[in-house]
Amino acid sequence: MDGGQPVPAAVALARFAIGTRWEELPGNVRHEAKRSLLNFVGCALGVPRDPAVEAAVRVLMPFCGTGDAIVFARRERMDVMGASFVNAVAGNLLDYDDTHLPTVIHPSAAVAPPVLAVAASRGLSGADALAAFALGAEVECRLGNSVTPGHYARGWHITATCGVMGAAAAVSRLLGLDAAHTASAIGIAASQSAGLVENLPTAAKNVGVGNAARNGLFAALMAEQGYTAAPTCIEGPLGWARACGDEPVMSRLVGELGSRYAFACNSYKPYPAGIVMHAVIDACLELRAAHDLAAHEIDRITVSGDALLLARGDRAVRDERDARVSIHHAAACAFLWGRAGVPEFSQACVMSTEAVAFRDRVRARRDDAMPTGAARVQVQTAHGQHYECTVEHARGSIESPLTDADIESKVRALAAMGGSGCDVDGLIRHAWCLDEADEVAGFLAGTVPS
Image 1 (cartoon, rainbow, N blue to C red):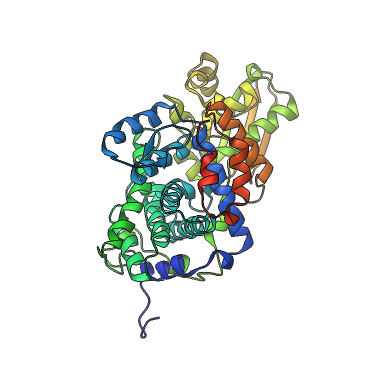
Image 2: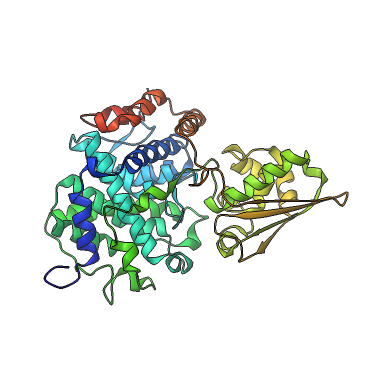
Protein backbone atom coordinates (compact mmCIF):
# COMPACT_ATOMS: atom_id res chain seq x y z
CA MET A 1 0.00 0.00 0.00
CA ASP A 2 1.13 3.57 -0.78
CA GLY A 3 -0.64 6.14 1.38
CA GLY A 4 -3.42 3.67 2.05
CA GLN A 5 -3.91 2.94 -1.67
CA PRO A 6 -3.01 -0.37 -3.36
CA VAL A 7 0.25 -0.24 -5.26
CA PRO A 8 -0.44 -0.65 -9.01
CA ALA A 9 0.77 -3.99 -10.32
CA ALA A 10 3.27 -2.51 -12.78
CA VAL A 11 4.82 -0.43 -9.99
CA ALA A 12 5.05 -3.41 -7.62
CA LEU A 13 6.61 -5.58 -10.33
CA ALA A 14 8.99 -2.79 -11.30
CA ARG A 15 10.20 -2.26 -7.72
CA PHE A 16 10.78 -5.99 -7.39
CA ALA A 17 12.55 -6.34 -10.75
CA ILE A 18 15.03 -3.53 -10.16
CA GLY A 19 15.39 -3.82 -6.39
CA THR A 20 16.29 -7.50 -5.96
CA ARG A 21 19.97 -8.35 -5.90
CA TRP A 22 21.32 -11.50 -7.58
CA GLU A 23 22.52 -12.78 -4.22
CA GLU A 24 19.01 -12.39 -2.77
CA LEU A 25 17.47 -14.81 -5.25
CA PRO A 26 17.05 -18.37 -3.93
CA GLY A 27 19.72 -20.80 -5.02
CA ASN A 28 17.32 -22.88 -7.10
CA VAL A 29 16.16 -19.79 -9.00
CA ARG A 30 19.75 -18.73 -9.69
CA HIS A 31 20.53 -22.20 -10.99
CA GLU A 32 17.41 -22.28 -13.17
CA ALA A 33 18.52 -19.03 -14.77
CA LYS A 34 21.76 -20.69 -15.89
CA ARG A 35 19.98 -23.83 -17.06
CA SER A 36 17.43 -21.80 -19.00
CA LEU A 37 20.00 -19.64 -20.77
CA LEU A 38 22.12 -22.63 -21.74
CA ASN A 39 19.14 -24.64 -22.94
CA PHE A 40 17.75 -21.69 -24.93
CA VAL A 41 21.01 -20.81 -26.66
CA GLY A 42 21.54 -24.50 -27.44
CA CYS A 43 18.18 -24.60 -29.19
CA ALA A 44 19.25 -21.66 -31.36
CA LEU A 45 22.51 -23.41 -32.27
CA GLY A 46 20.45 -26.16 -33.89
CA VAL A 47 18.84 -23.93 -36.52
CA PRO A 48 21.24 -21.22 -37.75
CA ARG A 49 20.45 -21.97 -41.42
CA ASP A 50 16.78 -22.76 -41.07
CA PRO A 51 14.70 -20.89 -43.68
CA ALA A 52 12.84 -18.99 -40.94
CA VAL A 53 16.10 -17.69 -39.48
CA GLU A 54 17.54 -16.92 -42.91
CA ALA A 55 14.43 -14.96 -43.85
CA ALA A 56 14.47 -12.93 -40.63
CA VAL A 57 18.12 -11.99 -41.22
CA ARG A 58 17.41 -10.99 -44.84
CA VAL A 59 14.49 -8.79 -43.82
CA LEU A 60 16.22 -7.02 -40.93
CA MET A 61 19.83 -6.60 -42.12
CA PRO A 62 19.13 -3.63 -44.46
CA PHE A 63 17.60 -1.73 -41.54
CA CYS A 64 20.10 -2.59 -38.82
CA GLY A 65 22.61 0.14 -39.51
CA THR A 66 25.75 -0.32 -37.45
CA GLY A 67 25.92 -2.83 -34.67
CA ASP A 68 28.01 -5.64 -33.28
CA ALA A 69 25.38 -7.73 -31.48
CA ILE A 70 25.91 -11.45 -31.95
CA VAL A 71 23.44 -13.53 -33.94
CA PHE A 72 23.72 -17.06 -32.53
CA ALA A 73 25.78 -19.42 -34.71
CA ARG A 74 26.01 -16.91 -37.57
CA ARG A 75 28.74 -14.55 -38.73
CA GLU A 76 26.53 -11.51 -39.29
CA ARG A 77 26.37 -8.78 -36.67
CA MET A 78 23.25 -6.69 -36.10
CA ASP A 79 22.05 -3.94 -33.81
CA VAL A 80 20.64 -5.08 -30.48
CA MET A 81 17.03 -4.90 -31.69
CA GLY A 82 17.68 -6.94 -34.80
CA ALA A 83 19.74 -9.54 -32.92
CA SER A 84 17.06 -9.77 -30.23
CA PHE A 85 14.42 -10.54 -32.85
CA VAL A 86 16.45 -13.13 -34.77
CA ASN A 87 17.79 -14.89 -31.67
CA ALA A 88 14.29 -15.11 -30.19
CA VAL A 89 13.03 -16.72 -33.39
CA ALA A 90 15.94 -19.16 -33.50
CA GLY A 91 15.77 -20.26 -29.88
CA ASN A 92 12.02 -20.87 -30.03
CA LEU A 93 11.84 -22.30 -33.54
CA LEU A 94 12.03 -26.03 -32.75
CA ASP A 95 9.60 -25.76 -29.83
CA TYR A 96 12.44 -27.26 -27.79
CA ASP A 97 13.08 -24.38 -25.38
CA ASP A 98 12.15 -24.12 -21.71
CA THR A 99 8.53 -24.15 -20.57
CA HIS A 100 6.83 -22.75 -17.47
CA LEU A 101 4.35 -25.57 -17.01
CA PRO A 102 1.51 -23.76 -15.18
CA THR A 103 1.12 -21.28 -18.06
CA VAL A 104 2.95 -22.98 -20.98
CA ILE A 105 5.02 -19.80 -21.38
CA HIS A 106 8.48 -20.28 -22.89
CA PRO A 107 10.23 -17.91 -20.43
CA SER A 108 13.57 -17.53 -22.21
CA ALA A 109 12.26 -16.82 -25.70
CA ALA A 110 11.44 -13.14 -25.27
CA VAL A 111 13.67 -12.28 -22.31
CA ALA A 112 17.03 -13.93 -22.91
CA PRO A 113 17.87 -12.40 -26.33
CA PRO A 114 17.57 -8.71 -25.38
CA VAL A 115 19.21 -9.32 -22.00
CA LEU A 116 22.26 -10.90 -23.60
CA ALA A 117 22.46 -8.29 -26.37
CA VAL A 118 22.16 -5.32 -24.01
CA ALA A 119 24.51 -6.79 -21.39
CA ALA A 120 27.14 -7.41 -24.05
CA SER A 121 26.77 -3.96 -25.63
CA ARG A 122 27.15 -2.22 -22.27
CA GLY A 123 29.91 -4.41 -20.87
CA LEU A 124 27.80 -5.61 -17.96
CA SER A 125 28.72 -8.58 -15.82
CA GLY A 126 27.39 -12.10 -16.02
CA ALA A 127 25.64 -11.62 -12.67
CA ASP A 128 23.97 -8.49 -14.03
CA ALA A 129 22.68 -10.42 -17.03
CA LEU A 130 21.54 -13.42 -15.00
CA ALA A 131 19.72 -11.28 -12.45
CA ALA A 132 17.92 -9.30 -15.15
CA PHE A 133 16.99 -12.49 -16.95
CA ALA A 134 15.68 -14.29 -13.86
CA LEU A 135 13.67 -11.28 -12.67
CA GLY A 136 12.28 -10.51 -16.13
CA ALA A 137 11.25 -14.15 -16.46
CA GLU A 138 9.62 -13.95 -13.03
CA VAL A 139 7.60 -10.92 -14.14
CA GLU A 140 6.35 -12.65 -17.31
CA CYS A 141 5.48 -15.87 -15.46
CA ARG A 142 3.56 -13.96 -12.80
CA LEU A 143 1.65 -12.10 -15.49
CA GLY A 144 0.83 -15.42 -17.10
CA ASN A 145 -0.24 -16.97 -13.81
CA SER A 146 -2.59 -14.07 -13.15
CA VAL A 147 -4.64 -14.66 -16.32
CA THR A 148 -4.30 -18.44 -16.72
CA PRO A 149 -6.12 -20.40 -18.10
CA GLY A 150 -8.55 -17.97 -19.74
CA HIS A 151 -5.94 -15.89 -21.56
CA TYR A 152 -4.52 -18.77 -23.58
CA ALA A 153 -7.93 -20.35 -24.05
CA ARG A 154 -9.13 -17.14 -25.72
CA GLY A 155 -6.39 -17.46 -28.31
CA TRP A 156 -3.62 -15.26 -26.92
CA HIS A 157 -0.12 -16.69 -27.40
CA ILE A 158 1.02 -16.27 -23.84
CA THR A 159 4.76 -16.54 -24.56
CA ALA A 160 4.57 -13.43 -26.70
CA THR A 161 1.92 -11.48 -24.79
CA CYS A 162 3.60 -11.84 -21.41
CA GLY A 163 7.13 -12.15 -22.72
CA VAL A 164 7.20 -8.61 -24.05
CA MET A 165 6.57 -7.25 -20.54
CA GLY A 166 9.14 -9.58 -18.99
CA ALA A 167 11.68 -8.36 -21.52
CA ALA A 168 10.82 -4.74 -20.74
CA ALA A 169 11.36 -5.30 -17.02
CA ALA A 170 14.64 -7.14 -17.58
CA VAL A 171 16.11 -4.53 -19.91
CA SER A 172 14.97 -1.70 -17.64
CA ARG A 173 17.07 -3.23 -14.90
CA LEU A 174 20.11 -3.42 -17.19
CA LEU A 175 19.61 0.22 -18.19
CA GLY A 176 19.54 1.27 -14.53
CA LEU A 177 16.02 2.72 -14.69
CA ASP A 178 14.19 3.60 -11.49
CA ALA A 179 10.86 2.05 -10.49
CA ALA A 180 8.71 4.73 -12.14
CA HIS A 181 10.48 4.42 -15.48
CA THR A 182 10.47 0.62 -15.27
CA ALA A 183 6.72 0.60 -14.57
CA SER A 184 6.27 2.78 -17.64
CA ALA A 185 8.39 0.35 -19.67
CA ILE A 186 6.09 -2.49 -18.59
CA GLY A 187 3.09 -0.38 -19.58
CA ILE A 188 4.57 0.55 -22.96
CA ALA A 189 5.23 -3.14 -23.54
CA ALA A 190 1.65 -3.97 -22.54
CA SER A 191 0.45 -1.84 -25.45
CA GLN A 192 2.55 -4.04 -27.76
CA SER A 193 1.38 -7.35 -26.29
CA ALA A 194 0.28 -9.60 -29.17
CA GLY A 195 0.38 -13.12 -30.56
CA LEU A 196 -2.28 -15.67 -31.55
CA VAL A 197 -2.53 -19.36 -30.69
CA GLU A 198 -4.21 -19.93 -34.06
CA ASN A 199 -0.93 -18.94 -35.71
CA LEU A 200 1.30 -21.31 -33.73
CA PRO A 201 1.65 -23.93 -36.51
CA THR A 202 2.82 -21.21 -38.92
CA ALA A 203 5.69 -18.80 -39.39
CA ALA A 204 3.51 -16.04 -37.94
CA LYS A 205 4.41 -17.50 -34.55
CA ASN A 206 8.05 -16.55 -35.21
CA VAL A 207 7.07 -12.94 -35.74
CA GLY A 208 5.11 -12.81 -32.48
CA VAL A 209 7.99 -14.25 -30.45
CA GLY A 210 10.63 -12.12 -32.19
CA ASN A 211 8.58 -8.98 -31.66
CA ALA A 212 8.11 -9.77 -27.98
CA ALA A 213 11.90 -9.73 -27.52
CA ARG A 214 12.50 -6.68 -29.68
CA ASN A 215 9.51 -4.67 -28.46
CA GLY A 216 10.30 -5.32 -24.80
CA LEU A 217 13.72 -3.81 -25.43
CA PHE A 218 12.10 -0.95 -27.36
CA ALA A 219 9.68 -0.27 -24.48
CA ALA A 220 12.54 0.04 -21.98
CA LEU A 221 14.48 2.36 -24.27
CA MET A 222 11.43 4.57 -24.76
CA ALA A 223 10.81 4.69 -21.01
CA GLU A 224 14.45 5.67 -20.53
CA GLN A 225 13.75 8.68 -22.77
CA GLY A 226 10.77 9.74 -20.67
CA TYR A 227 7.85 8.01 -22.37
CA THR A 228 5.24 7.10 -19.76
CA ALA A 229 2.38 4.63 -19.31
CA ALA A 230 -0.57 4.34 -16.96
CA PRO A 231 0.45 2.82 -13.59
CA THR A 232 -2.65 0.60 -13.76
CA CYS A 233 -1.81 -0.60 -17.29
CA ILE A 234 -2.17 -4.23 -16.16
CA GLU A 235 -5.19 -4.40 -13.86
CA GLY A 236 -7.05 -1.19 -14.72
CA PRO A 237 -10.65 -1.27 -16.02
CA LEU A 238 -9.33 -0.89 -19.56
CA GLY A 239 -5.89 -2.35 -18.92
CA TRP A 240 -4.02 -5.28 -20.42
CA ALA A 241 -5.66 -8.09 -18.47
CA ARG A 242 -9.26 -7.08 -19.05
CA ALA A 243 -8.60 -6.09 -22.64
CA CYS A 244 -7.46 -9.68 -23.12
CA GLY A 245 -10.66 -10.90 -21.50
CA ASP A 246 -9.58 -11.66 -17.95
CA GLU A 247 -9.75 -10.09 -14.54
CA PRO A 248 -6.28 -10.77 -13.15
CA VAL A 249 -5.83 -12.79 -9.98
CA MET A 250 -3.83 -10.22 -8.05
CA SER A 251 -2.44 -12.67 -5.51
CA ARG A 252 -0.76 -14.58 -8.34
CA LEU A 253 0.48 -11.36 -9.88
CA VAL A 254 2.01 -9.48 -6.96
CA GLY A 255 1.52 -11.73 -3.91
CA GLU A 256 4.61 -12.89 -2.01
CA LEU A 257 7.06 -11.06 -4.23
CA GLY A 258 10.52 -12.12 -3.18
CA SER A 259 9.39 -15.21 -1.27
CA ARG A 260 7.51 -17.23 -3.92
CA TYR A 261 9.03 -17.61 -7.37
CA ALA A 262 6.95 -18.64 -10.37
CA PHE A 263 10.14 -19.07 -12.41
CA ALA A 264 11.09 -21.96 -10.13
CA CYS A 265 8.42 -23.97 -12.03
CA ASN A 266 10.44 -23.85 -15.24
CA SER A 267 11.12 -27.09 -17.11
CA TYR A 268 13.15 -28.39 -20.05
CA LYS A 269 12.09 -30.56 -22.96
CA PRO A 270 13.54 -33.91 -23.95
CA TYR A 271 11.49 -33.77 -27.18
CA PRO A 272 11.13 -30.93 -29.74
CA ALA A 273 7.35 -30.81 -29.47
CA GLY A 274 4.58 -29.05 -27.61
CA ILE A 275 4.95 -29.72 -23.89
CA VAL A 276 1.57 -31.44 -23.59
CA MET A 277 2.68 -33.99 -26.21
CA HIS A 278 5.48 -35.26 -23.99
CA ALA A 279 3.33 -37.56 -21.88
CA VAL A 280 1.94 -39.06 -25.09
CA ILE A 281 5.46 -39.78 -26.34
CA ASP A 282 6.55 -41.23 -23.00
CA ALA A 283 3.51 -43.51 -22.77
CA CYS A 284 3.95 -44.76 -26.33
CA LEU A 285 7.67 -45.40 -25.86
CA GLU A 286 6.93 -47.29 -22.64
CA LEU A 287 4.33 -49.49 -24.35
CA ARG A 288 6.61 -50.16 -27.29
CA ALA A 289 9.44 -51.26 -25.03
CA ALA A 290 7.35 -53.21 -22.50
CA HIS A 291 5.45 -55.26 -25.07
CA ASP A 292 7.91 -55.28 -27.98
CA LEU A 293 5.25 -53.73 -30.19
CA ALA A 294 6.03 -53.26 -33.84
CA ALA A 295 4.22 -50.49 -35.67
CA HIS A 296 2.69 -52.83 -38.26
CA GLU A 297 1.05 -54.89 -35.48
CA ILE A 298 -0.97 -51.94 -34.18
CA ASP A 299 -4.56 -51.66 -35.34
CA ARG A 300 -5.70 -48.65 -33.32
CA ILE A 301 -4.38 -46.20 -30.72
CA THR A 302 -6.55 -44.04 -28.47
CA VAL A 303 -4.92 -41.13 -26.67
CA SER A 304 -6.89 -39.59 -23.81
CA GLY A 305 -6.18 -36.27 -22.14
CA ASP A 306 -7.64 -33.02 -20.94
CA ALA A 307 -9.10 -30.19 -23.01
CA LEU A 308 -5.69 -28.50 -23.48
CA LEU A 309 -4.12 -31.63 -24.93
CA LEU A 310 -6.91 -32.02 -27.46
CA ALA A 311 -7.11 -28.33 -28.28
CA ARG A 312 -3.39 -28.26 -29.04
CA GLY A 313 -2.83 -31.70 -30.47
CA ASP A 314 -5.92 -33.14 -32.19
CA ARG A 315 -5.11 -31.66 -35.57
CA ALA A 316 -4.50 -32.47 -39.19
CA VAL A 317 -0.78 -32.63 -39.97
CA ARG A 318 0.24 -30.70 -43.06
CA ASP A 319 3.88 -30.03 -42.24
CA GLU A 320 6.56 -30.26 -39.56
CA ARG A 321 5.13 -27.35 -37.58
CA ASP A 322 1.79 -29.14 -37.27
CA ALA A 323 3.63 -32.31 -36.28
CA ARG A 324 5.26 -30.67 -33.26
CA VAL A 325 1.83 -30.13 -31.76
CA SER A 326 0.19 -33.33 -32.99
CA ILE A 327 -1.00 -36.17 -30.77
CA HIS A 328 -1.06 -38.37 -33.86
CA HIS A 329 2.54 -37.69 -34.87
CA ALA A 330 3.79 -38.00 -31.31
CA ALA A 331 2.48 -41.58 -31.30
CA ALA A 332 3.91 -42.22 -34.75
CA CYS A 333 7.41 -41.13 -33.67
CA ALA A 334 7.41 -43.50 -30.73
CA PHE A 335 6.06 -46.59 -32.49
CA LEU A 336 7.69 -46.15 -35.90
CA TRP A 337 11.18 -45.10 -34.85
CA GLY A 338 11.39 -45.62 -31.09
CA ARG A 339 12.51 -42.04 -30.52
CA ALA A 340 11.23 -38.48 -30.88
CA GLY A 341 14.12 -36.20 -31.68
CA VAL A 342 14.55 -33.39 -34.15
CA PRO A 343 14.91 -35.75 -37.18
CA GLU A 344 11.61 -37.48 -36.39
CA PHE A 345 9.85 -34.10 -36.55
CA SER A 346 11.53 -33.11 -39.82
CA GLN A 347 9.48 -32.57 -42.94
CA ALA A 348 10.84 -35.76 -44.51
CA CYS A 349 9.76 -37.97 -41.62
CA VAL A 350 6.48 -36.14 -41.04
CA MET A 351 5.32 -36.57 -44.63
CA SER A 352 6.72 -40.06 -45.14
CA THR A 353 4.24 -42.68 -46.32
CA GLU A 354 4.62 -44.71 -43.14
CA ALA A 355 4.02 -41.73 -40.84
CA VAL A 356 0.96 -40.55 -42.75
CA ALA A 357 -0.53 -44.04 -42.63
CA PHE A 358 0.24 -44.54 -38.94
CA ARG A 359 -1.31 -41.22 -37.89
CA ASP A 360 -4.61 -42.40 -39.42
CA ARG A 361 -4.73 -45.13 -36.76
CA VAL A 362 -4.54 -42.67 -33.85
CA ARG A 363 -7.65 -41.25 -32.19
CA ALA A 364 -7.84 -38.55 -29.50
CA ARG A 365 -10.41 -38.61 -26.70
CA ARG A 366 -11.13 -35.91 -24.16
CA ASP A 367 -11.07 -36.96 -20.51
CA ASP A 368 -11.53 -34.08 -18.10
CA ALA A 369 -10.49 -36.30 -15.21
CA MET A 370 -6.94 -36.30 -16.58
CA PRO A 371 -4.64 -33.60 -15.20
CA THR A 372 -3.00 -31.12 -17.54
CA GLY A 373 0.21 -32.55 -18.92
CA ALA A 374 -0.90 -36.17 -18.52
CA ALA A 375 -1.92 -38.71 -21.16
CA ARG A 376 -3.36 -42.21 -21.33
CA VAL A 377 -2.53 -44.34 -24.35
CA GLN A 378 -4.51 -47.47 -25.22
CA VAL A 379 -3.29 -49.78 -27.96
CA GLN A 380 -5.23 -52.47 -29.75
CA THR A 381 -3.22 -54.83 -31.94
CA ALA A 382 -4.32 -56.57 -35.10
CA HIS A 383 -4.34 -59.81 -33.06
CA GLY A 384 -6.88 -58.44 -30.57
CA GLN A 385 -4.47 -57.67 -27.72
CA HIS A 386 -5.05 -54.56 -25.59
CA TYR A 387 -2.37 -52.57 -23.77
CA GLU A 388 -2.60 -49.36 -21.77
CA CYS A 389 -0.21 -46.87 -20.18
CA THR A 390 -0.86 -43.64 -18.29
CA VAL A 391 1.83 -41.01 -17.76
CA GLU A 392 0.97 -38.22 -15.35
CA HIS A 393 4.39 -36.59 -15.15
CA ALA A 394 6.32 -36.61 -18.41
CA ARG A 395 10.08 -36.72 -18.57
CA GLY A 396 11.33 -33.14 -18.28
CA SER A 397 8.52 -32.06 -15.96
CA ILE A 398 9.07 -30.63 -12.50
CA GLU A 399 8.41 -34.08 -11.03
CA SER A 400 10.78 -35.80 -13.48
CA PRO A 401 13.27 -33.11 -14.45
CA LEU A 402 16.15 -33.21 -16.89
CA THR A 403 19.49 -33.12 -15.15
CA ASP A 404 22.22 -30.60 -15.88
CA ALA A 405 24.03 -33.37 -17.75
CA ASP A 406 20.89 -34.02 -19.82
CA ILE A 407 20.79 -30.36 -20.84
CA GLU A 408 24.48 -30.39 -21.72
CA SER A 409 23.97 -33.44 -23.93
CA LYS A 410 20.99 -31.80 -25.58
CA VAL A 411 22.97 -28.63 -26.33
CA ARG A 412 25.88 -30.61 -27.80
CA ALA A 413 23.54 -32.62 -30.00
CA LEU A 414 21.76 -29.51 -31.25
CA ALA A 415 25.01 -27.69 -32.01
CA ALA A 416 26.24 -30.69 -33.99
CA MET A 417 22.94 -31.05 -35.83
CA GLY A 418 22.93 -27.38 -36.80
CA GLY A 419 26.53 -27.48 -38.01
CA SER A 420 27.11 -24.38 -35.92
CA GLY A 421 30.89 -24.62 -35.80
CA CYS A 422 30.74 -23.11 -32.31
CA ASP A 423 32.80 -23.81 -29.21
CA VAL A 424 29.96 -25.63 -27.51
CA ASP A 425 32.16 -26.96 -24.71
CA GLY A 426 33.27 -23.42 -23.92
CA LEU A 427 29.66 -22.27 -23.99
CA ILE A 428 28.65 -24.94 -21.48
CA ARG A 429 31.63 -24.25 -19.24
CA HIS A 430 30.92 -20.52 -19.14
CA ALA A 431 27.20 -21.03 -18.54
CA TRP A 432 27.67 -22.66 -15.14
CA CYS A 433 29.96 -19.91 -13.86
CA LEU A 434 28.43 -16.95 -15.68
CA ASP A 435 27.65 -15.20 -12.40
CA GLU A 436 31.39 -15.03 -11.69
CA ALA A 437 32.25 -13.42 -15.04
CA ASP A 438 33.05 -9.72 -15.42
CA GLU A 439 31.18 -9.70 -18.74
CA VAL A 440 29.06 -12.01 -20.89
CA ALA A 441 31.57 -12.05 -23.76
CA GLY A 442 33.03 -15.40 -22.77
CA PHE A 443 29.62 -17.04 -22.75
CA LEU A 444 28.56 -15.48 -26.05
CA ALA A 445 31.87 -16.44 -27.67
CA GLY A 446 30.64 -20.03 -27.50
CA THR A 447 27.83 -19.11 -29.89
CA VAL A 448 30.12 -17.74 -32.60
CA PRO A 449 31.26 -20.00 -35.48
CA SER A 450 35.00 -20.61 -35.35
